[in-house]
Image 1 (cartoon, one colour):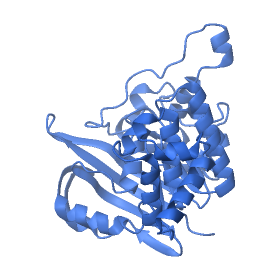
Image 2 (cartoon, helix red, strand yellow):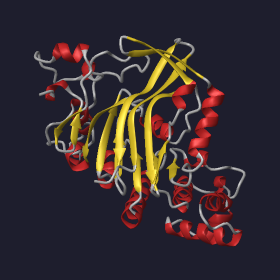
Image 3 (cartoon, one colour):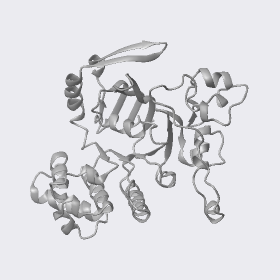
Image 4 (tube, rainbow, N blue to C red):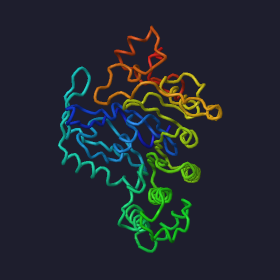
Length: 365
């Protein structure tokens, strides 16, 4: 079997809260992998660590301390890149009872080393679609100029004429109306959906091996959301680019993803094939995944004007994560046999069926 395109092992990304004088454990032990041509969907409530995981992969976490431990291995064009290679020398960690309680970092040295490691891959081999397309574009530069700049930086098309033609090709490919007109527009002259298409064109123009799409439909109306999801489905079928797709829209994930990872409290609680993870009647399943799926409005629910199902309780405080199962306080499936384990010990992510992993004491055996 060929090695995965991207492997993340036990990634930890913390931020320091001056007001609370404690660490915010945004990402706390994430392990994931993406194969070539695969689309991995990542779902979970806000604050579960999805976007911070994506930013950690691309080396775009700027606030201290940021990424403090773990491994991120990326393989493209026959070359293996360790995106965190030798960065541990810039970090000093202090642990107590198996938990990191203190971290200090040489921020200038870390940043310089990260830029050196990311230079061959960021924008060229790994491209990213951000949550807010208008914020991702330079408001003072024409849309076309921004796309041609990416093309000239990351492809063999160095001449301005050739780069412009490639930019127009990609604007047309993402189905933006009047590509030559939009090429001349500034971002403020485009709608949110047009800006998102322009950002997708910019990301794909460098022909990356991995595309990270972080909430690509956020802030768009329902019709445009559907069009963007349809566009991504077409591009997936045509180019087969490996994709890390982060979204709250489980229906979009089910349409686009081959595999799904469910994140909660900064870690992965379930991972497996999309048809299994997202099928409400499929078992075994993590209680949190079950609760997420139950909260999706159904046609019958809307027709009957019934109440929406909610996940009771609150997302755990990332400053003070529980020692046991992170979902224990909200779980309605705890039994007397596992109650003590759930409260005191965090379960491992274990394979319960071929290719399907769940982090839950109910499936410990």
